[in-house]
Image (cartoon, rainbow, N blue to C red; front, top):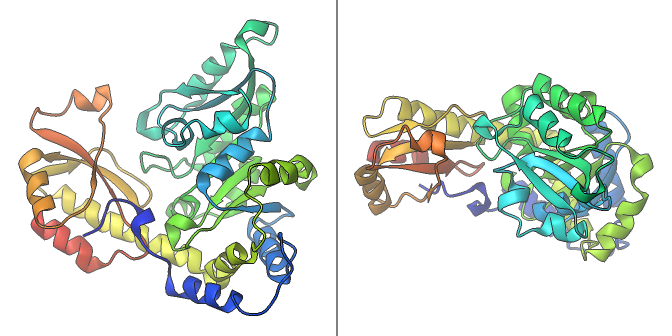
Length: 348
């Protein structure tokens, strides 16, 4: 009953085998091998246009380098208050962008709204040098609340960003889960809705350590080569990241794994719907869900071996909770089984 994070799951056997296969023989280094190039071509096929791909080791590196590529003096990056870049990356985005600043914005269900984004951008008039200047907008898909932006919502945020001449970055640590939930394509969820650059995550969905920066306009890739090298993210044996993505994409494995983890989360959600000791905090659209649970029931679950995290509740949600209740987060993965879920629900 491991629901702490999809990072707790191991690697899918087909991805692990791909690493073993790549371990033999010799291949040119620093992203120049035939395998690297083949996987880069696969990314272009998936996104339905020529893209430039930069392999990195962590999602924090991907996000930080993406935002650093847009750097401006006094730069302001607009994000949701609960975004991973704002609360879980130890100021790495600001560090790599050499003095830029994140501007957190409130919004329900982990999402930015066009009006709130426009208002935040409007706080930095272009002729007021003391306040700094808008630099970029970043959204998380799926969000840190487990929800997913609809295609129309992405397009609306992009319109606000473009009206201010700002690039739009998508933190896709759970890109596949959002894609599977929406039943759409990478192209429709990104560049066709105005996204400029994507942090494409594989680690949370069955890879061992595979993240990629996908630049949807290859003409803007020149500086990223230097940014990646300077940040120590240019791996000499990058074929081992490429090997993971090679297996990840083969025969649609990445979407199969995402659909499975989403289905396990939906199975959990159905159980909470009939529980007398817990309830969903809000509907979600990925493999991550949040529930309000009675403290005695939470303690009993942990005593029976369930692993999950307590989670801080915002003021609005906290106002609906009793003193003997706690907000918890549960995350399913490709490795979660129906038996795991049913055992948890039985214990609940």
